[in-house]
Image (tube, rainbow, N blue to C red; front, side, top):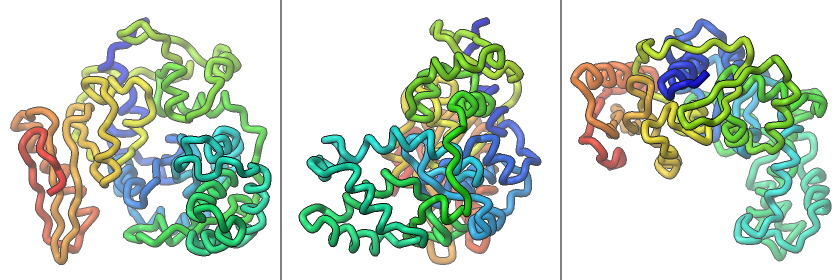
Length: 370
């Protein structure tokens, strides 16, 4: 069976809970989505506000404090917010690929070339023991261990070579504290679980992002061995083809969405996984091009209109006021513009409730940054 981009779009939105806001709890949503992209602090809050009815941001802050959620380096070598079971069982799958990164010539212009990987790891394990440590303190220890190397680059290597997570207050609502790092096991009070099969992780990916190709799975995870792992699932998966004739895999019990379902306007957080978890993004980016990641790095985030990327926005908090500026990537109808304005005002009220609020819609293609 061939699946059109529109079927894939509506199916992705349905599985991401972006067609209508869900009654799932925050922890249930994190489990279903296999974590939330949390490279920066605000995006997980926007992601959940867009997906959960009556979302209370204090839920995340409290969960980070009581350690029922964790912000940890996982898929694609980026920070994700996950439940403790996922932190403990996904980290061992990711570590072997992550550990290859620091000693490549391309890593920070070869900053660690010539060092012994086992020795660097051993120093990191000794320095970052059972107690959380700030990046500044880690750099001080790195300078003592390797006085002839850039200490910041050594710290980066330690944070890749060791399964680590960021501790609160960073990641809490409206808290932009600098990262404080901890080893995963002492913070969560449990050992890593290296027995979790990659095949099971991919089945969960399909339930949140599928149907998808093996290259999509690799793009999401940055892991290898996708075909072999999918093969292990047997009749728990089924196959389709896309408009370009590629094989797509899906959970056998996964439902396809009606392509004619209406898709409400949604404003996502920058780096939201709904946009970044497929090699071919045609199902959500109209021309199939990669999202403007450099813009995302400046806290510029996507606007979905009729289910597809159709604009970019950025929030500008000011003294006593807040602006949300939007740059459409195509011309909108009057109805679409009104829907974008309404959702933008709602997001701004959630994000900056105590300020005077203003939404600005620019000309098509204008730079959202002033």
